[in-house]
Image (tube, rainbow, N blue to C red; front, side, top):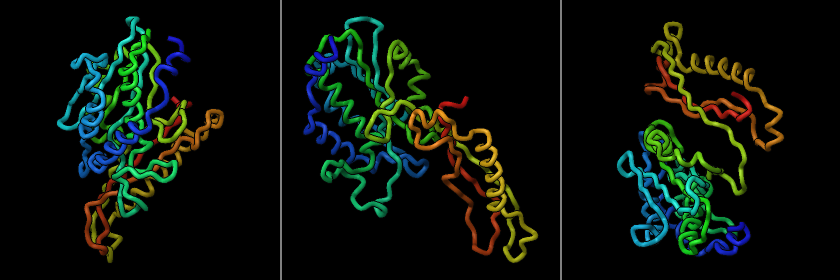
Length: 299
């Protein structure tokens, strides 16, 4: 089917249906925060709403959609939805619509982050752009394909995933799907990763590498600092040297401006932990954690 004909067949986005679904999904976002061990998301809360929209059009009810709910950890599922085409092997896929979110402290927000609100033409709430809005949008696309039933040569696949925002726990989301070969057939055609935290297409992004630096010093009373090795100071000095070497090895790349990258490659701390103790104690250990964001122009 020609692109123009397909657009005409699918029509415009049903805004009322989209807003209704997004309202339900954002309403679950308090339980989708991903920061183990304190906060472990329950992605099946989202899948329930997606299935409510799509199961009436699935093959189990006489519809065209092939729906596969894949779970590796209780309450933390992934969802693969297919609209079959007419030509075997031809495929187009949308992957990366993740159902977990980063944490949000309501005290830091001017509105409730865990419910959808509308301010003019703005949709507000945790996950509207990263990535629950994408979940709702692609759900509406698959629903519309099932409703209109256009004859496409390409099979269209949507892969909704768990556990994108944190790598402390593995074997839950897309890594497990790849390991089990469930995404192998997607290699036969274009794959669009639908997870840009913005409102326009993104043709390139920086990869994320988490890191952790464990520092061991010597605990002692702060009145006798010469008998201690301050783990906090030791960690700061070590991290300073590591960062200096990183930015020497991975300086801003000229292609970053060509492709509109907002920042060059970065390495920075984002979390700092130590066992605790009195203010008059020099800590003997601490852990610094952070990430590396590396633009794709470096190997």
